[in-house]
Amino acid sequence: MTDSAKAEESHDHNLRHILAYEDLRDWIAEADRLGELRHVTGASWEQDIGLACTVVKYDENAPVLLFDDIPGVEPGFRVIANFFGGTRKNMTLGFETGLSKVELSDAWADVYSHEQGALIPPVYVEDGPVFENIQMGDEVDIEKFPSPVWHEGDGGRYIGTGSYNVTADPDDGWFNLGCYRIMLKDSKTVAFNTGLGKHGRVHFEKNATKGEKTPVVMVVGGDPMTFIMGGYEVPSGVSEYDVVGGLRGKPVELVRGKVTGLPFPANAEIVLEGYVDPEVEVPEGPFGDWCGSYTESGRMRPKCEVVAVYHRNDPIILGFPPQSLPDEYSRFRSITRSALLRRAVEASGVPDVKGVWCHEVGGSHMLTGISITQRYPGHSTQAAQIAAQCQSGAYAGKWVIVTDDDVDVADLEELIWAALMRCDPVNDIDFIKYGWTSFADPRIDPEQRAEGNITNSRMIIGACKPFHWKEAFNKSTKPSEELLSMAREKFGYLLD
Image (cartoon, rainbow, N blue to C red):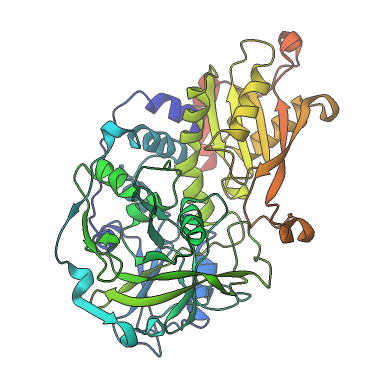
């Protein structure tokens, strides 16, 4: 049975959802219980940690790595990487470990919600483990942490890859969590990196318009679920803390920064608190980004002065560096985006959507497959155009392939087969210009980038049988699920 067929079968069943961890240390214990934790001692932050990640990130069944006894840093200071893989990815999202990737994606979409009735606001507490160690003012030294050089071509050390920033809207005060990488500049300075249109960037621009610095806290080590929400498409005005509370079934416990008052989890590992200066920029990158290429050299980003640091005893940096595709990052985003994009297409009124997959090889953004049961002329065009431009699909998209319901769109070879066999390039490919894209897109022309024109074009590939003669279209040799099941039952031993 294909992944998509399994998802259709399991979609009607109520899967038990429970997050078996409160913080990163609980999560590590659960990964260890699953037999998927490996301890690595003596690896250097200068090169070894990045090399180890290069090895494991291309194997979705590779273990999570916990680096300890790192040379040149205080004993007990640790780094963890490759958290989303194996069966632990199911545990991370709160489900049983036997689900396929499409089943997991579909199950996740069933429990995720940012609607008002599903939200549980956080509660504030006075103290927590994150305050076990406090540095203020001149005491601040962020170079004491084992921030790795993740890729050989990186322009420096990145303390934040599996991190999120917390900012407040200066107009109405709602708190946003956003995943924006953090480059270490010196013992008290980091670069503030946000994409155009992202909520953290909007908050920064609002403050800059008023001539004010932007208060920010950066959670460098936290529980994986809150990190996941920091990189999610939660709408403006809704705090990710409220969404996490809804997913946990109870409020997140927060403390407030002692300088800015911004909130962060009481059980976080490491938190940097500071102010972003709209008048001062510092070099940022290059960095091996999610597109599988390095960001451009010469990039400048606003400077963030760190005025306070809070961390637990024996703190842990959560690492989540991208690699060339497909990798851990793309597998993670494909699972957490695909079914939600399907829901968005269905919510717009497109009927009979049978499958959607945001493919790993495109970083979960640049190649989307969508299958439908055709009901009327233009149905396939409608589905593809909406998938390319709805809120869940608009950012950094590039190709959308729409095909018939006999194609498993989560299977890359099957999807490309449909595009080759059912699409006439002249008649069945359309283009959209000036789409919202990412600074990381390596195809943006240098002149266009210099002008601030961070847009791209989209290709819509119609790989459905032409509606007006689909009944006469050559039949596929792909066996039915019933026949395939029979074949496996009778002759599966041949593959043993």
